Image (cartoon, rainbow over all chains, first blue to last red; front, side):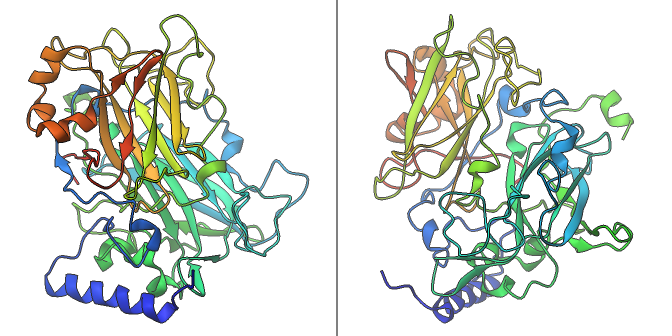
Length: 253
Length: 188
């Protein structure tokens, strides 16, 4: 199959952006029906999502603890024989729910490409080196204030076959749980100023520019540590909780 | 900046094609040891809009215990064979199939219809989808369920698992005529 050019994809992206802007209908969540991302065409529901009140089980979430996660799993640069190649980074932030409450002691999982933009995955055919000292997957638990923290390597941009000369902006995949099942979130964190943002149909599938920017971390020199690693801050807001909080739970916010 | 006006939550993005070394883990789909007393299999296949199996999707379930209570025990990532955590995760195989070894969930309230809460992720799917796999046995409870009773029969069918020899079958259709009913909860 012959791949289309970037300019074809760019034109589709900008046509959708113009149409949503004119209709005042920019959306805060990605359009699941977003043809510029070719793989989405047969994999999105065409019927409206059904508005549903959560039942009891959906107002709770699975529980994780240090039984599940070793503190060392938050440092993706250790555990191998040597130092991984690339820029060492610290990525940290706070997970809150829609009402600003911290999401405490909950699981955060990440996975990413290495500095050359290569994933440790048998289906990744990118001609970039694998790094024997970097696998690119990590886990941690948020603390009592909802903070998470990882040490990793800045991932490279990643070529894919959505169209000819398609490149994903550098990103880290994040998986999050809240206090409710309904808050489950899988998303991607990006780095500030990436020149590939405007050309990426996955990022652009979120048609509200302010919502898209919520996926972009901020460089923070106060997090940067001398002669060791640069620091990025990325806060995550889950949807509102549907659980009824008791006064005692609310009073210690 | 990622600080914005209140009311906005962080958008989702696709799980992509390379989640296999980030999310799956040993024992992820075995909430209980397969074949142990009371264990059942919940299994199915994920299909795209052409009816082709989706080989790079990830399914999660979250459920009550057989007595209807909600587990709040850690240990899903390090199964010890004794603790029922209520959470499981299964990536689909090359033929689009997934399975869980688990216990049948009970009703969380008297008369409520028991179901598995299900989350669906896939390459090509830009945001996660929520659905429910209801147990088929208690017809009175199913008839009284607020969600099921609001659906036309052909849509309702997509949410009720089929009983089979080892447990239940629950296929997921992302698109098409028999598209699974996916849910939108308040707050998003």
